[in-house]
Amino acid sequence: MLTTELQADTLTLRLSGRWTVQRLAEIEQVLGALQWRSVKQAQVDAAALEKADLSAMWLLRSALRRAEESGVKIGYSGEPEHFAFLTELQQQSEAQHIAPVEQPSWPRRLIAGFGKQAVQTVQHALGHLDHFGHIVLTNLRGIRHPSHMRAPSIVRHAYEAGIQALPIVAMIAFFVAVIIAYIGASQLRGFGAGIYTVDLITVGVLRELGVLLTAVIVAGRSGSAFAAEIGVMQLNDEVDALKSIGLDPVEILVVPRVIGLIIALPLLTVVADAMGMAGGALLSNWLLGISLPQFLARVQDAMAPTTFWAGLIKAPVFALLIGMIGTYRGMQVRGSSRELGRLTTTAVVESIFMVIFANAIFAVIFVELDF
Amino acid sequence: MTDTPIVSVRNIVNRFGEQLVHDGVSLDVHRGEVMGIVGGSGSGKSVLLRTILGLQKPVSGQVLIEGDDLTTMSERQLLNVKRRYGVSFQNGALFSSLTVAENIQLPLREYLKLSQASLDELTALRLTMVGLPLSAAGKYPSQLSGGMIKRAGLARALALDPQVLFLDEPTAGLDPISAAEFDQLVHYLQNSLKLTVIMITHDLDSLLTICDRVAVLVDRKIIVDTLAGIMNNPNPWIHEYFHGPRARGIHPSQSDASGEAHGA
Image (cartoon, rainbow over all chains, first blue to last red; front, side, top):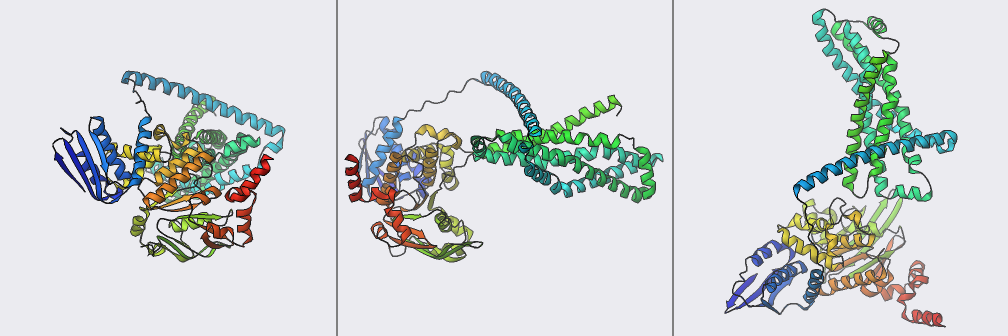
């Protein structure tokens, strides 16, 4: 592929065979192994070259160019004429001097990193607030002028976030209630208090688990869907297109999703509650021999008037949080598919976190209010 | 050698549901030829390209690459054939999470073991070739203009020194100066490196300056001829295409006449 001959201070490079992209790795090695010490002149002889392409010839030229910089004179002979164009390209590319980017020292970077993070956190908090305000204002306008409430769109999102989530929500609620009944029964039976399993299920499912599980599932399903849908629309300039037509993307894209979710989540919660109670009833019958009438009577006793409502009242709040975070993160997508993935993930993680955090606040408030 | 066409499409039929896109389309492209594909919107130009690339299986018909049938090939053989292709898509199709340099280096990294220094050298070659500044190397596609994305897409298509180059509307969205430079580049590639180029284009200047032959997709069929032959084709759509108000530039005598009229 390359034979070299050193006579006095003249190095002759004879190219032969195929210099093509498939053999670049070999070519790179051969060129790297060239000895330039004590060489004053080099003569490239390409007469025996069988086949050559741009990539290979470019690497050759780059290697020779480096030698030239260290004072070697280079001459070409027998090279196919059309590669002369590479010399021109080489000059063009060398003419563009690119200043290397200077990295600041690490303490500086550390402090800068902290600062950036802090500023971003504040900006995000403000961004969420701004987004919330925008949604509220759009809703107020919608109440005054009902044509601004996009009913078909709201129905679609309520359907997608609600009806289509029914099977999974029902199943998970059922199985979690089964688990709780199982653990409760096996623990409480030891004290002869097996009947209190029913209390545990009733209060646990209706107050906390029904709504919390539903919200977490919906955050995973719809929160990610909202962020991804709006994110792709951002990438395709669809959101800008809406703006340029004079339509408000918040009104068209965000509000219907949030309202759809606020409608769907309480309904899903009711279903989850019912399925949870069904699972509890089944297990109570199975493990403790409590018949359905007995179970229902015990449920009546265990339930305070507020138990069911304490769970359900949280659903719209969770829906608002999930809808807001999903749509906000979707709106933030810019530029690349990686951003889309990152922000969709962020949307799901944030909404699950916020749902659980809000649930904790509710718990404190309900205890303080004796609700 | 020139007897076996490098790309040969035989009696392709493509159908989407009720809609028949191609009804027996045949096309031979010879080595070292620049073939321009034209046709109205929705006439199936991109579908034809996707069929040749093996991205879409035709309902019936064959696609032969140097005599091998693409439609019956194993995945492995197909991959081998695809290494010899370079494709530049209509919207660039750059990977948005990679920088321009990483986009260009991706095929090289995938197939060859090269040092980073060599990869950077080769990236500089491709960028300079397509007329991008070297400073574009570190940028992400979202930071580039439409024309630059197009050039970067072409740079990636050229990364492996392909034997066949497929271009989907390469000059659409470029300013006339860049489009002319692009024509020159394709002309150089074809002339010096004996590259085969198959391009979908609506740019009449490209058709005139670089295409050896032109294939027109019309009424689900294809008509292949030299540009002069196509221009005299009696088909009303083709006549309209090449003799319409925007086609004056390719008829020297008429453009002179209009120039005089303008002067007066």
